Amino acid sequence: MSIEPILFYIFSTILVLASVAVVTVRNPVYAALCLVLAFFTCAAVWLLLEAEFLALVLILVYVGAVMVLFLFVIMMLDINLVRSKEGFIKYLPAGGFVAILILIEMCVVLGPENFGIEITGEPLKHAADYSNTKELGVTLYTQYAYPFEIAGALLLLAIVAAITLTMRRRPDSKYQDPAEQVSVRRDDRVRIVKMAAEKKQ
Amino acid sequence: MIELLLSIWNLVPEALQTLLIIILKIVVIAVPIMLSVAYITLAERKVIGFIQVRIGPNRVGPRGLLQPIADGLKLMMKEVIIPTNANRFLFVIAPLLALAPALACWAVIPFADGWVLADIDAGLLYVLALSSLGVYGLIIAGWASNSKYAFLGSIRSAAQMVSYEIAMGFALVGVLMAAGSMNLSAIIESQSGSFLHWFWLPLFPLFLVYFIAGLAETNRAPFDVAEGESEIVAGFHVEYSGMAFALFFLAEYANMILISILTAIMFMGGWLSPFQGIPLLEDLFAFVPGIVWILAKTSFLLFLFLWFRATFPRYRYDQVMRLGWKVFIPITIVWILVIGVGVMAELGPWFD
Image (cartoon, rainbow over all chains, first blue to last red):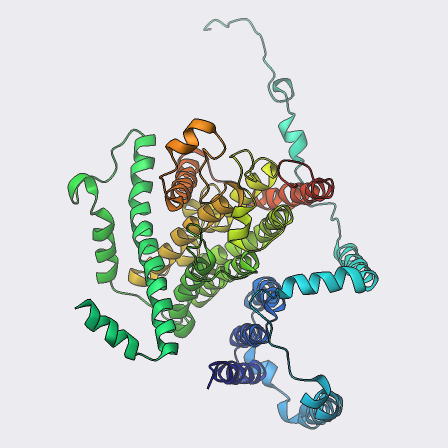
């Protein structure tokens, strides 16, 4: 028996447990860390699928950057645990309804009749010289070059929009202009006064 | 005796044999790293001592050579104090989270031609992904300590690391464009020729950006605002003592060695001899194995770390941020465009 199925089951068990923990643990910092764990094990499962580029980028982007900023915000906020648990019973029917709805939708869309092994076929085992990174790059920059560029432009637009929407220049905040600081001359700062020596009275 | 050992070895199932060999390789890599970390602390104190016209530690052992051992023993004997109201679990796990990624990166580092634990195709990406995890140890340590100084320190260091990671990532993009591969061994191979073929020359701005961003990533002086002892006592590890503190220390120094060896690999030709292509000297130094060259280059870069610490005053916090976002990132983006043009034009002798 090969070791891959064992690894797969270990990682997917951790993944499922961590994902459940994200929504069930009380402490928000723990929840964020569980999400990190979920991302990490998900990357491990992708590695088993020979998608090493996606797996490493998942870690790099989501674990290395996005979740760090999430943790930042969560730690800065003094989250009131008691108040966030208030109204649990009140919202339970609505929340439960949405959850069941999403579950049904996922079963319909992602069920075996669409993504079963007969339809997608078994994932191919590639030789050792197969490079997922190269394959992805070639497909992205040839076949999907225009959609890729459009997605990039959209992201850039979103960045610019987010910055312009949230940027406010307050008149009372103080700025430094390093160029001005560097180009300062002695005459701007120091004034030498010549005066005659004074005698003691 | 050897035959007996061999016959025992052959009895072991094949899967276990591979596992044992891999574990042995890990030990062969990790133990020297730990020893170098110990002796870099001594080197740091000695070098800074000489720069400041002092002698440095010279009491434990001959010429102070046993000082790191004494320090290690002292830290091991000390009590690990866990502050009241600290989050016990996260408080204990944070140093491990800082150290583990620093060590895991070494899996893909080639020490000489073919001397690498995992010769994976996406080595550069792996290093980048794992080194971005080190920041969790710092953030969690600061938060779990339940101390304002520690929390301020961890916020400072996290902001700094996230900012400089971008510049670092862009510098790596330049390297992989120039080398045409993300495999670290292939990157070194693509620099062979002479020391003018090494990437420090065509990628000079990226070389500087990468090394300075590496200083900032490891929270070393002059970017050690995360520790800033005159402002926030010692930053994120204020509340740590004993071995828990020692783990942070190990992580910082292991990261320093990692940044140095990565700079050596990506910009200074790794295990390639600096005399390659020079008629007489090349034959004269042909007997030197590649690992000597890569370790020599790494040691030189590590010395720069210590030299900087003794020379430069600490950056002010807003200037650290300005340097990262407004100076380094534009430089790297512009230079990536330049490399793109160079690669397209097959500019010799680097990109042909």
